[in-house]
Length: 597
Image 1: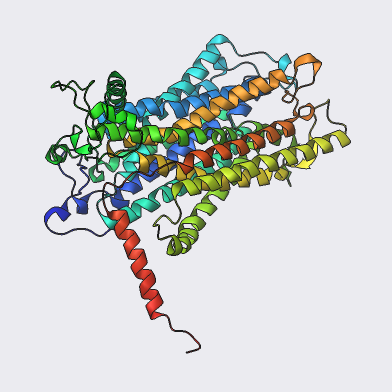
Image 2 (image 1 turned 90 degrees about the vertical axis):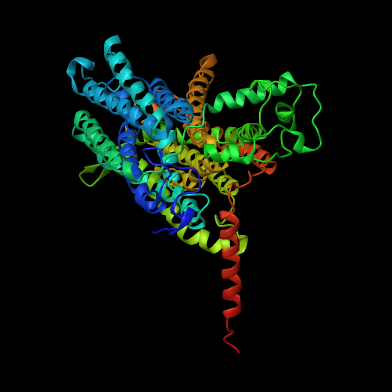
């Protein structure tokens, strides 16, 4: 893929305020585009291999090596994954307010690598692991010591801190390589997130197949050492692309700017809002141009916040008087919060893939001839399904549908997210039906109390894994693009962090629901829905509960999305692309010859 490059005048430089590593205006012909993105994408392939090489099979390490029960091990996985997806808020703050995305990423990736190295030692040295135990009843096995747990979880959470600085910035760095003011680059940017997800899931696919097989059949030491080495190589590859990157200059703390608007609004709660927006406080366009930022016009949404830019005295105290642009930036970030909340439940469903879905696989026949399939390997089908759907969506669906919608994206981002949420209802419905059948076969073969293997192939779980990948192709890709695209230009890192926060909160919700349901269903002498012996459990009820939760969440999503107003573009690139699509359609229509003529 190539981009149309300018040759003279201002076309030689990007128009979105990006600079090179030395702080000088970025030359369009020597920076950015798919060439710069290739270094970023290659890094993410290896980083995802490292991350999912740990998370995909972590529940089995906790149960088989650290001898933890179903609920405890599942919650330890989701708590760690949740933390890994919440820390990007801190990384986004540091990038936007102080260091910039590039240097925040470089420092965080070093922390990430140190966590991976320590984790590899924790699973390799005998002194850092409890003695082996082959008893099916893990409650009879020796528990890990305080030191062993401290080293293991210390490594995990060091890794989580590292992801906090890399996750919100790496995809944003990639998107920053395309100039919003250049129509051809804007078109490439619309495809960037599809191909970004497509590329990084190659790393996930490798982790869910090769790495989990090595961990289950060769050893955890090699299974963790390989992704650690891969992460080291990926950091070196990223750094080698430094001369080609475009950088956004840090614009100050997004949280401070938002706090100032909110404080100023409440401090002037009784001040009337002028009908003429020209009376609001705002800087000249030239002031924004000097800083390489954008001025935003006033909108009628969340009018109460407009009080922050109403002049009441001669003071220019930033906690009492804000510009229209600051107010509109705050409005935009707050407007996305209801959409953010509507993605919590689907993220909770995703948490089941690496916990209960994997535990289900351990109860089934995993043999294909003499080959024994690692339970976590079924996660590869989530990836394969996602990759297939992304290609079909970007290369077939979008090209067909945008002829009718005139939308360069094909359909709106919220519509794409809505399809994903509907698919999540189907995922948990299918999972409940499948688990009900598994329990029925377990009863018929008398393996309920013994917890022995159920005489069914592990492949009966494939539909729920494949459907999860299909749902992710719609929801997760659209979610990342939505929060990046809809965030103000100076708050892109925070917008990207929004998409990771949904996964973090979803994992914490999963921990809460699992613990609560396990405890409540065992009260008054009942057997309970989630036990260490899954053959005695009722995961079918639990999954049915999730299907209902997804349905209620769909209603909430439809309600909040109905009132959402998309932000105005900072450039006319989208309009230019839409006009080109319309002109192409007219040209095709005019050139069409009826075979009957």
